[in-house]
Length: 422
Ligand code: GDP
Ligand code: IMO
Ligand code: MG
Image (cartoon, rainbow, N blue to C red; front, top):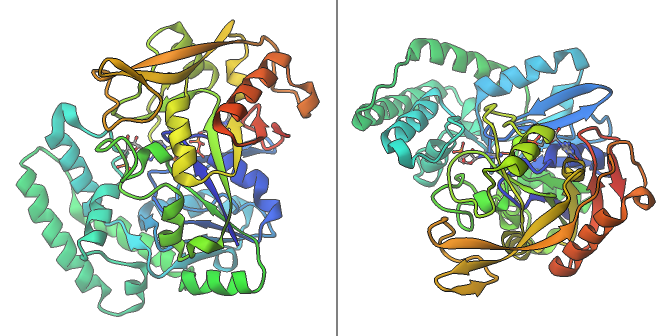
């Protein structure tokens, strides 16, 4: 069976931290979608690591790490990630396996991302500019380059033909994008040489064999359900299926082989980039969440927009993914608020609704809040469920009742050890 770990909001829920915490119980950690737009943070032994493409199980000796076919890989960023980890003496050839069917992000994909965003002006998606959209466009358009192509001698010709086409497309946008392709290509070819030193596999076969041998596998999601290409706040989404179904296509796992679906959410909500966010706060409360939660993007450094928990959106994510267990992150950030608000419905076209409508722009949707009592205690030193303050327990019980799924982990700080099991 393959368990899934998925972000239920707009990303940055704390997936990296929890995958790292859970890896001791698994034999394989596998990424199934997204690419270096992801920034997954892990903290232990006083060191903070941010991973973009490498699965978050990499620091554990017991687990293999797989980059699945649904992922898009930028060899340049990948090389930097490996270089950053050099001091930790990880045997990447043995521990990190790359699907031959994963697609490659070319330097011109990144340029196309920038050209597209510039051309959109105010309507821009707020992309991380890592080339994600253009790479998935080439994948579905059947023009992409895959990791497996690098094992054939003609890969540079394929690269050239695609890069030339991209240059013509960049010119079409008619925007001022400055670049030196020779430099970008030199960096790309260097990255490819590093990538080629790793082990390429037919990852679906590897997963079939691992399942047959009774291995425990955890699929690590990137982004969050509300950034899903189909079910997110389109067009302000990413270009892959971030929801449970994405693990089936992104790893080759049949639906019947999915075990537990672990859903992660913050005790409040954040979003980075453009797009609707009904519970977004523009007052002191939002600023406090941002400051205490250190809410800056792990990939781009941009400040994250903050707001109260949106239960309407969270219920939707629980349903879309079939979540069986919940994990509540960053509970410590809410310490000190007199009241905690939760959005339980939307005012929409003159009525009150409790489902996610087609459009959740502020012009159509106003959040309806329920208020709960806050708590003052510092949670960051706590380690047992019995120590949690009564008001936090009431918040947890309220959410469990509304969502009808148990909250099994409460996270009270960024460190591996600041994790409370219930
Ligand atoms: P991911 O993309 O889902 O892996 O999440 P990110 O790493 O982008 O963002 C989560 C941020 O919150 C990181 O800086 C984490 O170190 C931090 N973090 C995770 N869990 C907690 C928590 O319970 N409390 C606090 N204060 N920070 C946390
Ligand atoms: P992790 O895995 C938060 C957002 C971008 C932008 C939109 C599209 O760390 O949770 P893209 O680069 O995919 O074209 O950007 O999606 N976005 C994320 N937001 N966390 C992420 O990943 C994100 N990956 C993309 O900010 O709004
Ligand atoms: Mg992140």
